[in-house]
Image (cartoon, rainbow, N blue to C red; front, side, top):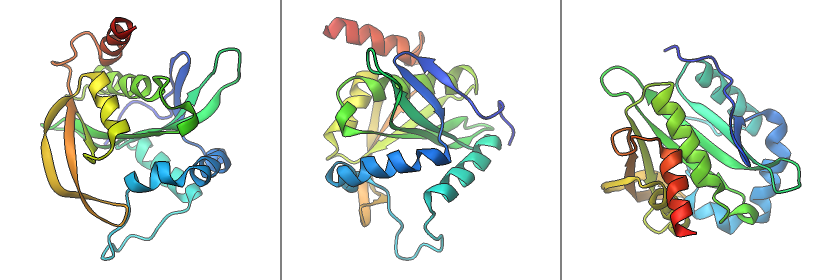
Length: 207
């Protein structure tokens, strides 16, 4: 399934989306080792019956890059440039399960380094990713599945104006068990001027 050439880089200062790369491993590991309680309850896990082996970071980057070149996913690192500073690796936004044909939809997942949380980085990054999917890939629907206990992630979809569609029981294996998830949707019809434009307008209104 072909798509626009990968790699793809998107910029909306101070946030940049660029391809995840092998040399991100040290910073990726450092962030997660320093803040395990921030990540562990929300990290996907493999069920005991899964035949797929775990991947190293280098293998993950290689596999994701291959899938991206096939038009199946968009594995982005999120960079943030503090005022007067240099860009830092701040998290990830991954568009996966890109489906064409009559569906034209995909999933998006995200995380942020807790030291940069609350600065609008992830809402901006997800909005950029969604607008790219709608405007360039011509997708019609982006799904975001969130555990109902994950208040920080739920705040992101609220800020983006995502539409709540309901709860899926035992939807995904997370933190060692099958967990319920609430499903939210972004679509061009709900965001006719773009997801990023709507988010920034709301941010101005909130002060």
